[in-house]
Length: 266
Length: 135
Image (cartoon, rainbow over all chains, first blue to last red; front, side, top):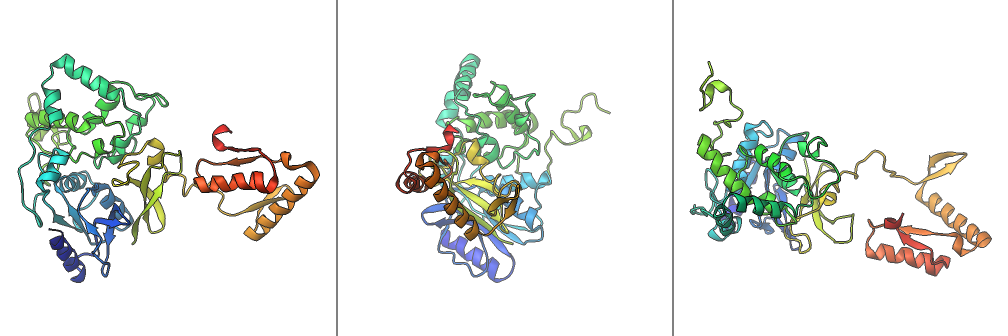
């Protein structure tokens, strides 16, 4: 599998179809994002653990919008890139996507329901994980039980903002979670439930189930379960999946005339 | 354009979390937690996440300065070190080793802090050595 990725990368660079390829490298025993250029050795290329590529593409394009960039992406990265492009944070015009399907073990580790990009260059499409043990445990509780579960989980929060910083779709320039009117500075844990619900609401039509929020959390708060439940509600209401379709805008940002719910509008 | 990821240890507390500084064309633009590092495993506290912000701050002193006639002037490292050594020896001669206090930093490595202790006790002869957390 990895040799095929190496082949694709070196072909793109040799033919000049890409000026640089964003992928992962093992350098001195640690895995990091790496921008490969023509002539670089691909011996250190690795595919796992995944890093969120969306924000890195964004910072590269900010510095050099004309760069012909190729990116090795998994399903979640692919959806993040689509969602970022729809929200004018990046342009996909100069971006060549190298689609990588996750293995079963990788999908299991992320409890991912859609472990494949829109178009697969390497690997085989496998079925997603329908529900994690944790998600089953939370959804099985009654209202009071669920409230207590989240109360206990969020009581551990040290307000590191890791969930926000790690999230490829947390793109507000002025974050309300840093606004004293909503979240008082210097208080830990942050107010329940407003701190986490503001983020949950902001992400309701953006979350691409990459799991970066949870993997960035030093306190092991099961955020992916929270966002899985929100995604389920959201797709039930609007039949919409963030990042799945480049042309379909979020139902929360389209004009009322195109809205699926249109009672009372002209 | 160049985009590098430079592995480094968080400069704040002593836990030793690791992250990459994302460097685009020589400018540090962000922090990416290192997912394979055994201490931090892809997580950071709020200080680690913000550790890139002071790097290019315009208030940072990037060259040695000596106050001459009431005003700071840029000088070479050689001049600054010669001046410091001369003044320290003069003060030690006149007022004794305990007229010195050495304050080290949590942003230094263990080894750098050890060396400052050595200068304080071994070279200057005083036990007045402490760290920034007690400032």
